[in-house]
Image 1 (tube, rainbow, N blue to C red):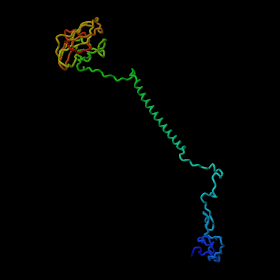
Image 2 (tube, rainbow, N blue to C red):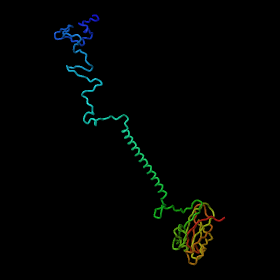
Image 3 (cartoon, rainbow, N blue to C red):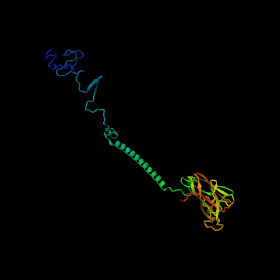
Image 4 (cartoon, rainbow, N blue to C red):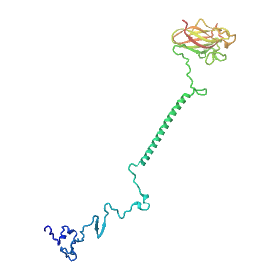
Length: 303
């Protein structure tokens, strides 16, 4: 086959792609091309299933379906706004960065922070208030009144502190021979107001046991009361009677019989050992024993 002669019956049918749209033959198979189809007319293309169709057109099962081409509107599509109530149902997607939800979250966060701040402030105020109340209570608390129970203070010991000389009430002495304690006469210088009476009976005695830190000579003081008359008693130190009695004169110048006016004191020198000693006052023969005793104590001798 040469150019211009590809088996076409006429020049206008000389188309190398004519097989795409020519009929392949008819009922009798006749035709100029010998394909059994009807004779073709010059210049008229035949129709066949291989005919070129427009883009988007296909035929399936004898029925032709058109596909919607790009840029063309679907015949079955209707815009929402053309439907009844379509405009109201139109939903617009929120734009990116919409601030409404963020403002809601920010509001909740600010509210939570405010609540925490209020609670912290309340706790601080309560602590400061309680602290101030405690301080005020401590500052304003009064001392114990007469109706309050107060723990009694420790009673002073009868035993002298180191360096101090002993001193006792006469009622603490060991009594004998009819001597006894009494409170009838006022003015005794003891804590209880008691004194030793009954010394005017022969053999009556009051013995004081004491400790001396060092051996030596001491002044032995006696507190007493007389009824306006002088008196005296015998002193016995560690079992040895002194030759000179202790003078218990009416140094208070009390009237005769005024026992409550005759309270006074007198002393006598005694020699003591280091440690325990005994000093006894007694009514012996030749003594003037009409006297009451309230206190005894030691003092260092004068230089």
